[in-house]
Image (cartoon, rainbow, N blue to C red):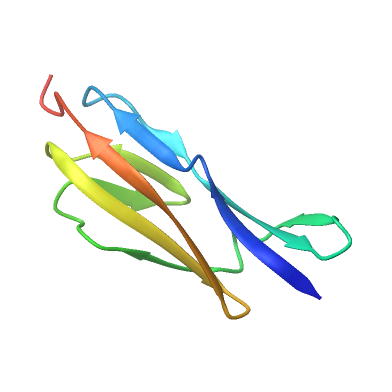
Length: 88
């Protein structure tokens, strides 16, 4: 049985328009075994005004803060994404 779901990295700072970050979701069983479930979770981005989200990679669109949430097997986890200097 699965006990936790974690999104990595938990905090992302994108500091120029050319920055990007690959994101993964990892589930952990009660016995400690982990599994990459990145392609199985339901992803939701609370503010697509600030970041583009495609193929598990975020890149900046405008300066601001967004939260990306993963939901899987009754569990959720999220990461905060802060963008700055997105036009530079």
